[in-house]
Length: 205
View 1 (cartoon, helix red, strand yellow):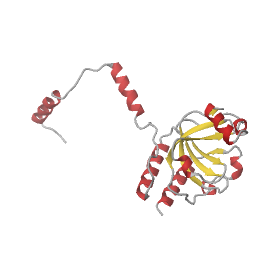
View 2 (cartoon, rainbow, N blue to C red):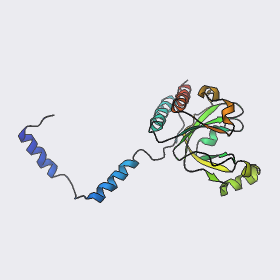
View 3 (cartoon, rainbow, N blue to C red):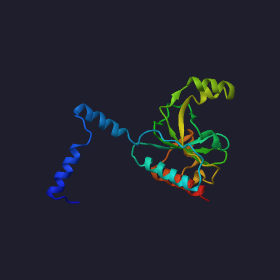
């Protein structure tokens, strides 16, 4: 839109009446920091999914995945698939070979070792912790040997946990069992994207 001289003057008078206050360099720095944080808050899945919400959640997840600041992983968990274990804040353990490379904001595909089903996506909350106090209490009652054999724990929040188990297998993500000797392996963005879209597609069937 192009304004003539009369409209320009009218617009200027309107803007002069808008609420305003003086700002300085410090205020601009604060504003810049706040803007940089936009869109980077932890997002988590709060509700069960229907076909539409599954597709929307998948696209939101993939938009975050393309921000260039995250790693992508596949984590193999012992036993059968356990969807309910990942619907709230949770954690997984890693072996004692050294601190795992998970970082806050990384996305992790959870797969079941027994069935090779890849069935949930979680987001890493923070740095992996060595022999955390909560983990010591947990292993005392569940698996005493795990505290020394799998001493690293990584906290997570849910990002895409379907309502039911879907037929997405480990091989479909292009990962072999041999690559998972440490229980986890990095994924490329294209592998992660294909896996998320497969979960979303299967959720609509």
